[in-house]
Length: 467
Image 1 (cartoon, rainbow, N blue to C red):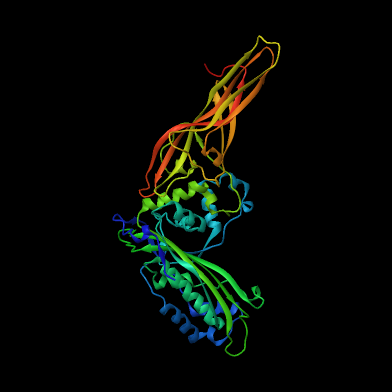
Image 2 (spheres, helix red, strand yellow):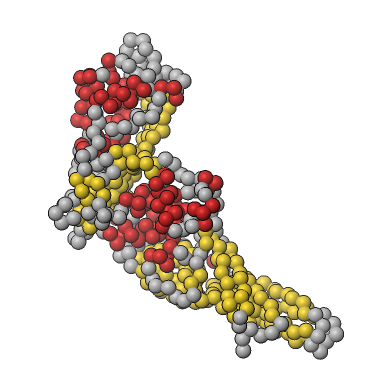
């Protein structure tokens, strides 16, 4: 099946300034016949095909059929799957949108399987970002929202045949290597492919299977394009992910030249950045969309993240972008709403001091965004604002759940009762807001609009809180 390439990837070219990355040479993991024999034996396979020169020839049969390319790697990983919210410790949940929590979840979710030609040095800061961007849900989000997301895919295919167990495993290696190479467009060098599949069978013990072999696996390979150690830069950094499932019916059958029903389902996806600013902007979009480390959690679990309210308008940068409310935008840029400077606005007053009867005061009040352009909040968004206002020595705490209902302003009638001989002031909590825009092509941040957010939080007081 032909590789599908995004327009942005197809027309990207090479970014003239290069990508700065400091790497040291590494001895890459190799696919040795002895190690593969061990892995096959652990699966219960002891036939002549799994030993010595015959096995060496099997390996060469695979590697000789793969169209090799120029991309190298600084590490091969396995994605151990989405992390469930209930598996997290309370302190991690409280800090879920911080860098430390993200690092912890990256370490938990992705395990290194092999070494590449290079080991990442002190300057390189791309591994964690690439792992986040290739995650299936984040990858899908950027395909929809970022017009210049440089993706390429080898669509999933299903191969059914009757072959021997060893031939089925050879086919798995071949198809996985082919899918990875095809999805990268530029292709992967032999050293990297050897490292990638050097231990693809590790841990598949014979006792794990009754009679049928059925294993789902994956490899996540970091990519380097034309790395120059003298200049400490390359023409591109990226990542490719291959997922496969191999099923072999009655795979340990010992009769002469047995043939088994086998099904191999396999596909691959990749991305390659030639511009650091573009990589940084897409990374920021993903973290803002799900709030930090939530981007690595299981999607089926609703995660309520907190939006920060600043004392004053913060700088237009990534930290502010990640801590603010993501909005619906087009594919040219990404917007968030920044909240700052919360206050109390007087919306009502009634003086009942001359009356002997209780009085009820009602007033229609509007809540929502007071901005020039429409504020769009996605239906799946569920963020909390928890903050406080201090006015005339009075501290007022408030909480607002930011769901899609706030995409439009709303009017409600607010009523409160004032006892006889009393008076009362009614205040509405307001927050200044500003639309922060991230240009998904240049990676630049800028404020493009300012306004006010009228919350549905109210406070009454016997005395005025300000003149």
